[in-house]
Length: 151
Image (cartoon, rainbow, N blue to C red; front, side, top):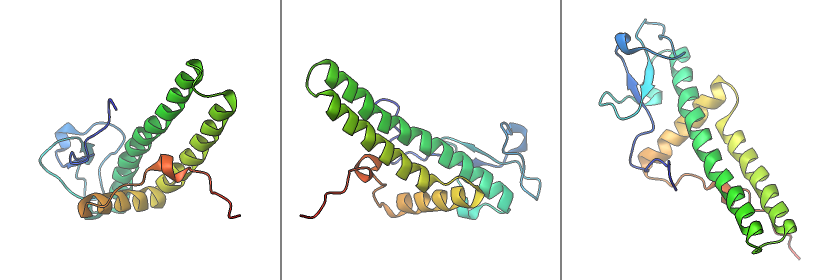
């Protein structure tokens, strides 16, 4: 799909050049300017960032971008569902089921991404570890699949 980052391309890179500081990430406790920038050569992992405030800000930025990217992928399923409805391939009840699945998937994604400094940091460290280890990232659409009852 368009706009999706290849898996081998880094999401973010830590830049330690104070003259290039932009955005709301500010500086860490040592005064080192901190900002995530895509595709730079001075790469530092989240866990290697000194200073809790700078580390959490970097994690928030990383997870914010990841959350938006993944939400767009989930919403693409809903868009395709409306297109299928318009073509007569599914009925309104099928689309309703698809929308419910989107809601479950988005909720699971939101739970993973967190909503506070420690939650963002935990999610960023987990995502970073998966990528370093070559582990597959969650398929949030599959995570929203309804449970089948045993019968």
